[in-house]
Image 1 (spheres, rainbow, N blue to C red):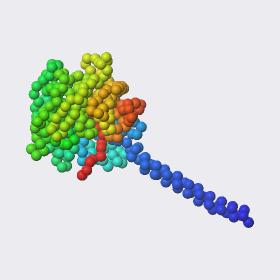
Image 2 (cartoon, rainbow, N blue to C red):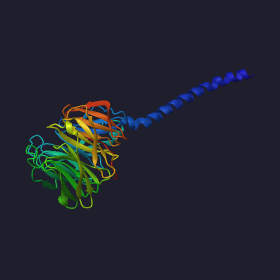
Image 3 (cartoon, one colour):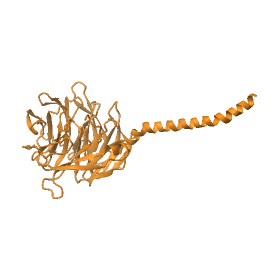
Image 4 (tube, one colour):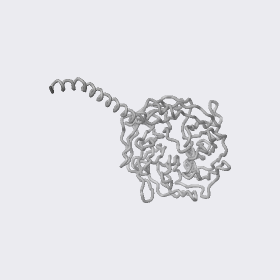
Length: 403
């Protein structure tokens, strides 16, 4: 009696069990794909420099990067800034005012975030271009409210202010400040060379590193008049011949780090947003003293999102310098240098999550990725790299803040 019943049960329920198992496996696979989707999609970033235009790539969770694709044709697109609330990328053209092919300018590009979410690389659509009243615009930044773009002009040693419309479109330059003076290095500091500008976290001040003057100048951002005006504490004076190039704020908004191109040093400074005053804390070498050679220079400085580490690039030494930030006074102390696996690291970029550092080697046309140890700040090569013609800037796509 029981044997026929068991045989019948096997015939009826075995296929059902098999089908159930297959369905569960399929569902598990679908859920796994959905969970892994954003990770597989990776993080989009743009590459600029001295090649034919702007490229897009994608950083994956293992440090690999997609083959760069040309998304906009623009010569000498050497630096980027991202609108904080809109899908708009701002790009400088590092040329002269009277350049016959494309005069010094600032361009606004719109990108398609939907294309990024679907796994593609977003194209850039040109919105408009405005002329820059300065030579060699080499840096652009946008304030945290998305109201102004600020451009530093290396060749003419001036700073340009551009109001932004609510759509992200550029308006004509509303304010131009021409720096005056020189520095002790007659080969590099024969006149002013504004190299970088940053809007402070309170949106009240604009700080400008001028390589030719050995100064970080402080301007008040007058939103009503759409002008930059000298602040009550107009500058931080650095050592003669230092050649300040780029600056970076600490996440707490109370510290500023200045990388000095000619002097091969990093200066830590306290920032008082109430008075607009910078006070030097300490200055240290970006390479070991005994290894220092003539003709070398620094380039970029960035603070890790954790606020515990500062990184700076050394050209000639061809390394990224790692500095630890003192929890007591904010002073940065160099603790190690890491090869960029290429020649002449100009710009580098840390991904928004602080997991990877991408180092651009301008003279070897490569970008290498490094994993960041969150405990020590140390860099470890991932073994992944891509090629790009004379790369000079990277910008990651980030999530807009607020409406």
